[in-house]
Image (tube, rainbow, N blue to C red; front, side, top):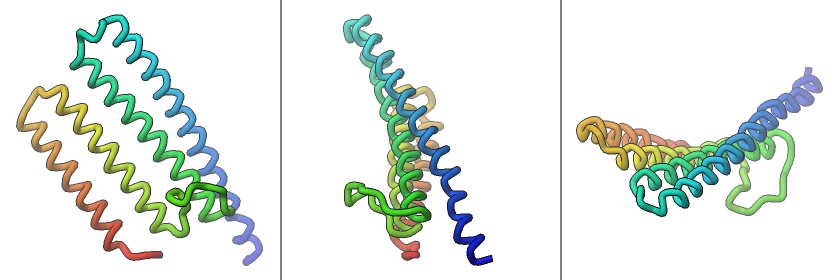
Length: 151
């Protein structure tokens, strides 16, 4: 049984490969959105600054999501399979490190999503409630990361 469980850790490769494929797709999608935004900027000669700003914020959001998927894949690989040569800030030693890194990216994605909503500004009360909800989740994630304890 011990040998079976030891070898079954290779199952995590399914999640790693899937996350890398999803990250690759998101990076390609972000690159496509960048090209579309650049074409929009060039064709409008910068006259539609508001719409272009929202497009560029959306591009950032896509790349942040792609980065989160990549960090997740790398983290799972390091935790279950083996070490990788990575920058020090990306090295993940335990599950708490992975959760903390992902929490940081999730907070950034929520902030960018709020900026998109703020740039579109349709309903002040809904925007305020949306911002408060994002703030509550961000505080919870920061608290969880800070006080959650090390694994």
